[in-house]
Image 1 (tube, rainbow, N blue to C red):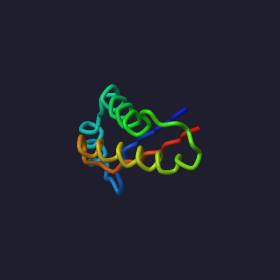
Image 2: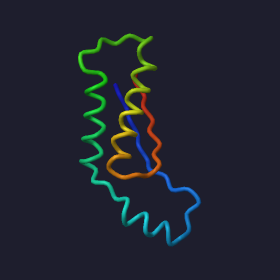
Image 3: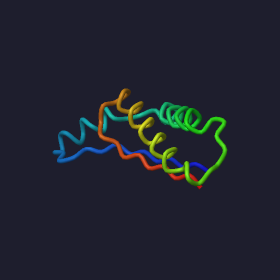
Image 4: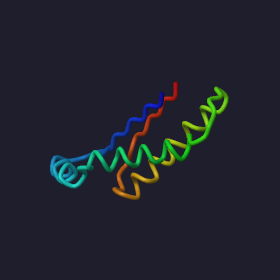
Length: 84
């Protein structure tokens, strides 16, 4: 099972910044899901589960998702991945 969670962050925002952020930051869920699925497929394709490889897979998934999301919308992101 692979679980990947993403959230975008805005630090030290004023109310005006927050309103502008909300109107500009709307992601299309299908777009985000496509990015997540693509990165997970690339990293885990044809891999056999080995517990010692999991930390490097998690790093690769998080880094890949963050890079692709930042290319779409240049915000700060928090990406969390769990492989169990």
